[in-house]
Image 1: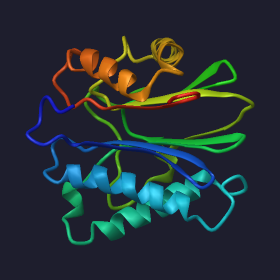
Image 2: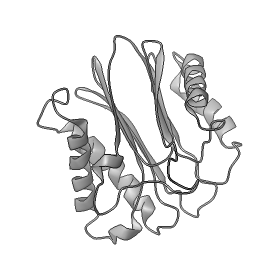
Image 3: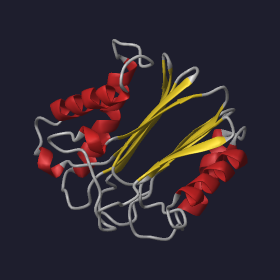
Image 4: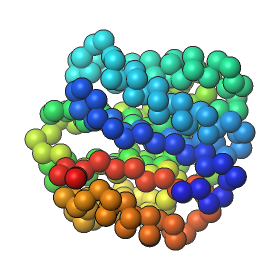
Length: 220
């Protein structure tokens, strides 16, 4: 939902592939004129790279996969000024018994499995509140947060751009929101869930673009 920029600079992708499910959320930098292209392009790049990856994701570093996604992103943006395409990245890949996730920049990604929520979010260490990391010409691998989870039961995952602020955006707030969200909406019809979310998300405080993406066990 765009509420601030003339063009919504957020993008997301959430769909299955042959080995599981991929969800990507990206927030284009507000100061960059083509960041809506950058955010859309990284969502598509992640899906295409992961779904066609030659090696088994369970035996290769997920940072290497993200590096491959970044290379594909740059290739697809070759006709644009990449300095105007900077964007953040939140991605989760849910496979049969493993989950791979990565974060670069702000917003949050929360994964609910085996009764526990694992959070990836920008703690703003050594940054001002309006500063964050993002995809640009060179990828700083040290700034990519990676989480790998082995699980028996997957409940759901929720990802939001920073336009959707949850309390003080600390782990306790994100965990509580994720558990309540998944517990409330699991096993409901997809159209019903979307209608309810849109009804309260459009009135969410703040003036930035707002994107909330999710995948849940039992979702119809």
